[in-house]
Length: 426
Image (cartoon, rainbow, N blue to C red; front, side):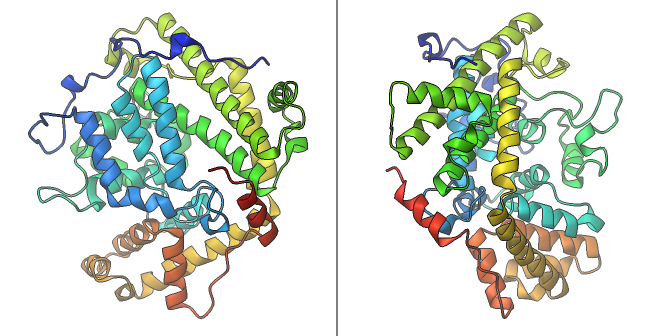
């Protein structure tokens, strides 16, 4: 598959498209506020997200690797910033509101637990009798309830468009006939989403804006490229392995031809940057094609359209799927990572069990919330879940050490951590 080369046509943002969200026509906030004289409503949303506590905690939440294994692996924060950059690029090229796309990119991982998807899986299992755990629903809880910064309201009081995109960036949650979307068919929609939707209708059966779709696609682009980067730097895979994927082998060949014997750190960076460029350019070209074919002229048309308007071509989608499958087999299921996942899961499980039985062991604010919920196991469990979900990796480990005699050591392995630091790029 040929690799795209950056086109000057993509470098300058076109005029705002008629199908873009218009900040001046936002549906507003649940609690009305005066307009800012210096920022659009979506710029204010973005800024509130950046300044919130949950955003800062992303700096010490695992992406795939435990952060202390090396300073140069991704955390949730570095991943989030990279998603924001890609989302802005897509939005500007397509004439969308890049402030809204960036706000959604910066908020998309706020609901993630410590220890990556392991923490989420364990909390979901522990919360199964009480409604389960879903990181998108948790992000909504954070920005509508759990953040306590403002005198007039709980949460961040974000605009309807930002909340819509946060909840629906992966597509509608309800089908046209009212049935739950396939991904929630077994468990039903999370209560947090249903409860908020009851007071601020998010139109769960419609697609989100093109800006939200761009942020979702940016997440996938960043995830693949940067997990591949981290796996190569950690020594879990090497350039011989990636030859299993035709697309990656082709890019490696394009790098090797003019630069034979290129040192590994540069070869890795070249691979990753070319990978990102290819998928961004393909997404821009394919999204323009879909938009033209659909003849959407208003944001309402985007929401009512029966399929995403922002996406990859068939060839790029196949390459994307091949990379995801490769990473699943060779990185996410790697035996060394499996051991860390088991140990991290034990920490989360132990903390939940202890705090559920003895909520007074939580900080005073959380203990008080649990005391108010003492008549309902489900409410008490949700308080404990909220507390643990907000923890950073290192705080969760510290809390476990405080409460238990033995705490698992979360180490990939000294040789791999050492190698990762040696290949660092400043």
